[in-house]
Length: 391
Ligand code: PXP
Image (tube, rainbow, N blue to C red; front, side, top):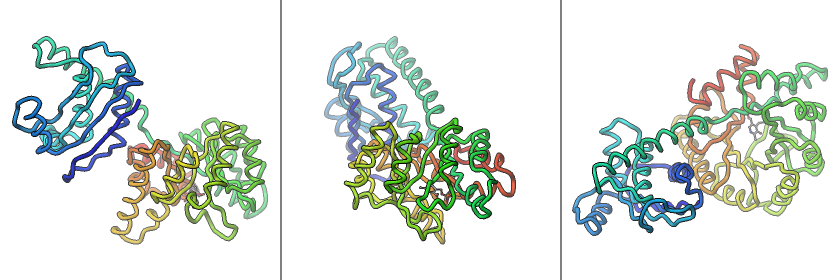
């Protein structure tokens, strides 16, 4: 289902092309055109006015124009449908007048343009205008329903710190396996555990029991060391996240240098792939690393949010956030699935969770620190509310 988006727009309104492509894909699916092709062009008022004048003899800007490649209704799946041209200037002005976010108004314009490409035309008759408007409303409602259920970012809880506390006494409590169950009961969508080569927190026993007891999804975080790779291949967690691992570090310090070790990482990813284990690569928000992650065959990237969370002042934090946002968008538009994590707490999480491209956040320390004060169940529920925009 190729969606081609081209922007000729140089004005001040910023939109997510990845989101637009995702909406277009969902709409084609709803219209039974999973295999059809569509091109979307984003332009200014001056640009759309030229097109409107040339093709419709109307010398004024408009919000959306459709240029079908095929005539008639009932087009089969797999059709080259044509072009939808949207003026972001008019779209933004209309969105402001109607008091709705630009991205929501763009969805309406996209639906209108698409229904035109599928052969309906409100200018042909009053009856067709009514039918077209009903078709558009129906599509909008279905899309909104899908978005509401699909868009919610998920929360995976890292339970390493429960094991850290246990290892401080080298006894058998607190038990990270029990903690994982409580996190799941509180609504966490997944459990993350890092089996380090030095076994400083998680032990082999923990990982085995987590594999047997986690009901949501077990994400095994690991360095690409041969011993740990073999454990992962035997264990078959729901996914693995590869991280750089240094013996001296307190916690994972930076993202993987994917670009610098393509051969090694693609071999690990292939071996995991043979056992149907999807791989996520933990990387800094760096365009080169994202492209490399795609090239070595990763399914996910996890964008390192540490520098954003640790930033000293507002300006630095905003700069770091922009890097995370741009990286998430780049990875998503390349077709990677996008997670994020490290250092996220009750102050910094909402902003990252609100990014369109983010599928899941991986959070450990902040939740465990709060759990000591308010209990694990409450700490997870409070973080979940933030992740899902209800905090
Ligand atoms: N993601 C990765 C790849 C990590 O290494 C860690 C730390 O174990 C986390 C997320 C969670 O970070 P934090 O404990 O700071 O929430």
